Length: 505
Image (cartoon, rainbow, N blue to C red; front, side):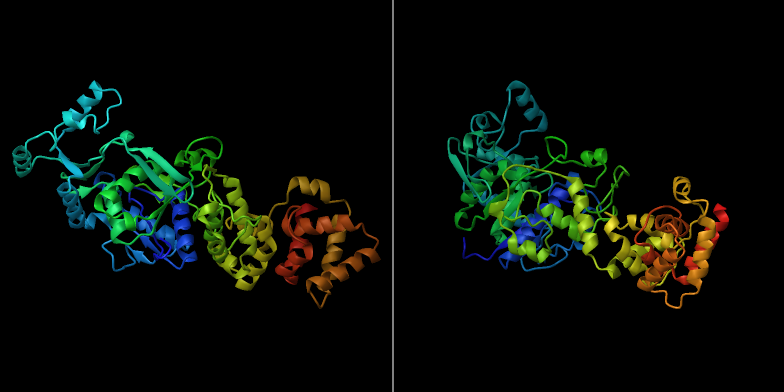
């Protein structure tokens, strides 16, 4: 196994929006592939035509483009093992269905849905297996001529895998160790349906993984029960030597209880469970996305990486290169990981702080335009540099920093009551006159001169500075006051002081 080239795959179904758990699975596959100099395949599992949702495939691709997870081959990426969309591989699958039938490893079943339902009503916990198959309508119980006649007549049928009972099936899992399941508890899974000429997930994945030389299957815990069946299928085909290594990832759990994380949890607690906003074409429902909610893609990936895996040290903020270097499937947890969405906000804050001001200014620009604000990029960059420590999301930058761009027209009543003293109007007008006389308006020089001016007149430092802030901001908030005046400039600073004195007198 160690000599095989590492090739992994992410294979979503186009049945709706991409769940954040799927993003984590894709991320782990990507990290593993990059760490081992391997390749990541993007495959579309669309064999269940009844569940197909228009636009879902495009949505998934757009999600990974935004997240910054590149694929090496697959749907829309090309490659020599295509086609990579399962609905385009019908003939390939049929060949392998026929191979299993010829080897006696599978059989044809004609049971109708009504007959199956009747059998379920007759037998408690019925499953189609070695104990019941002889009483059903299939090629094991019907004469060969009857089977041929029915097939020639176009009767609908399925092909079932013939599982022999009483065998312990050993699955070697990188995360969970050896998993042993007795074949007697497995049913004869449907591998192929004549109704649409398509295989089921179980057959399609085994064939695709084999033909695409997949070396490791890294997928969610929910697929663990199907692993013994897949092992048996590899054996049935005689592909034991090329069987991939399995790694079943822990579930993402509800933030406030047990059970798998769902869209309802996000709706209930107010956080996205999809990477991008999703417009459901069937229901018209709109679901929030991490992109539209103001998350940075790097923050989302860093947050997800640590849900069910740890690097073995206390480091939390990691670049993609660091994640690639540190990632190890053996350090993945066996138990589920609670989805701490508040920690997700923390990561976003950390990444905003680390993002250069030019990039952040570009992200804020559309909001400024929406609010009718035009300002030089140098000014916007300076503002985000002063204010980014105070926000968790880019969209919050406008609310905390709009006073830089729009002069206050009203003044917070509580702040006025507390900070605007009887002597404030005269002091502020005198301060405006003093600032007007400064030839150097740099923050350091302003601060030095204003402090000296306050001391010279024996004013109360706190009263002057609090009133000064109120005139500029409209309330008692904001960064260092001389950083504010530096952004506003001399003319606007003085105009705001005089306007406030008029309004508050």
